[in-house]
Image 1: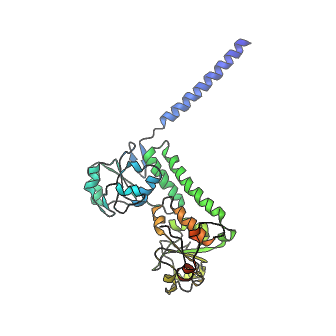
Image 2: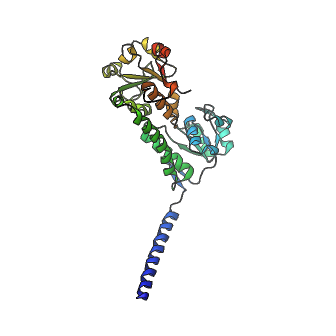
Image 3: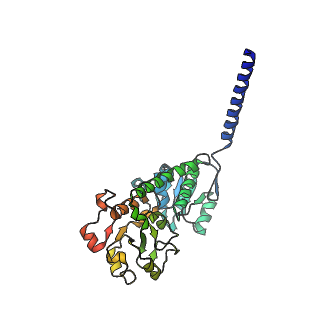
Length: 319
């Protein structure tokens, strides 16, 4: 009997060890690099990156990769330590000689570079990874995952990026949970420029602001919407990009008769934070929520003053 028990235990132990060996081999087979990022195969973990986008450089610092950045563009200035990084010129007017001299492993940008710039970098055997700006929150998650893949490889990078997005998503959901039930019934409009630039349903701005109800320009595309169509939707809330405000709409023939304008339900927000697509978009939502529903939010700076309500709407811009 003892011999039988010993044999059984030996078989169980052997089976367990074999399973562990198989699992370990599978994990070993998943190499971090090379990794495919936005149609580019990155062979090794980049140690030096030339980041040619203010948005991407802010995201890199936020996700813990700021120490890898060796070059920036002149318009990148956040966080504060970014200003200490050498410049590679202005967006659209790059100093490719400076980029080549810095010997970065990767050039990271939101937009495709000019043919001339690409040829110079290809000659220097410098890879260019283009990560387009997100058009909605789903694409923002993909953007964050691609950044994780670039810096951590295929084994851990995708999950690291997803974890960063989860923080943003959790912040949005926390704000949404505090909104009163009436918020879901609201119709909003986001005017980026009174000349006719509107956050239509296919835009990142619309995707983020949808916590406040339905976009009056939901069915329109390409940042353009017909004024007549918008009037028919009769938005109860209007957001407008800084530095514009209520007076700009009151004097505009296209918008002055909107109910939200007549009732002073116009709120100024900082469009720059939308464009950067970092977690600072939470600042926009939080302050807008506090301005719209002060009874549910306690940020004093978001409460409309008498002057802003009577003359210029409410500012919820983040400075």
